[in-house]
Amino acid sequence: MTYLQAVILGLVQGLAEFLPISSSGHLALLENFFDIKEDNMLFFTVLLHFGTLIAVFVVFWKDIWELLQELVLTIKDLIGRKGLRLNERPVRKLGVMIIVSCIPTAIIGFVFGDLFESFYSKPIVIAIMLIITAFLLIAAETWGGGNRTVENLNYRNSIFIGIVQGLAIIPGISRSGSTLFASLLCKLDRDFAVKFVFLISIPTILGSLILELPDGIREGLHGEPVGPVIVGVLVAFLSGLFAVKVMLKVVSNKKLKYFSYYLFAVAAAVIIYTIVK
Image (cartoon, rainbow, N blue to C red; front, side, top):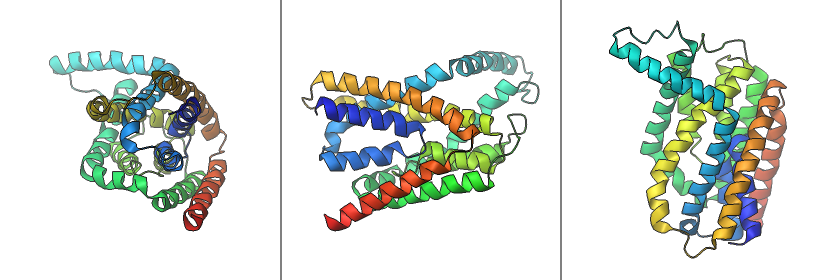
């Protein structure tokens, strides 16, 4: 892997992880384009995910710290038999809803993970999924959005958002785009919706890291130079940081549809390239 390839892969991972364009789909397409063996990419991909995870922590560190503090207080209340008291403590309710959302995501990943992983080598399937993501973004802007915040969020909404997030394991289905679609369809306030989407991404990305790390360590870098790997991870972190901040503005300003135009163009290019190849 060259420095240029590492920079491109890191840039794509950082931007596409949080912009609604599917990082998994783009990385799979780039692997096919660069003819990079998947085994050689596994540990590098794990490190790229780590870079983007740190980006979320940097942007939302205040919210994360509040959630961690509330977790300690929740344990104390449960030990003292005071109950969860979700209606009294919005931060606690947010934490519970994040956990609830991640449960169906984890189940879908365990049950269908191998099937979804088989799509990584099928550019046509990825192109179709990119088109589906594009339509989800258009639908989110057309019918989605409301004024509901954490006080109005319920278990049914969280489970629905979690199911949609689980389907985003399919390469080409954007995790941020699909969960934003689900959140806005539940009539969540736009600012709260995008924050909720990014917060539920933390356990999702972290879980993926934990599951992939053992295999990644076993596979190692296959003799790949360390320099490009470090550069790629740094680029993933910085571009992820940029992408998160962009998304906070894009969702508030109702600009999601512009990403759908990009997705249509990429999907069309992939289909044409596959036919001509």
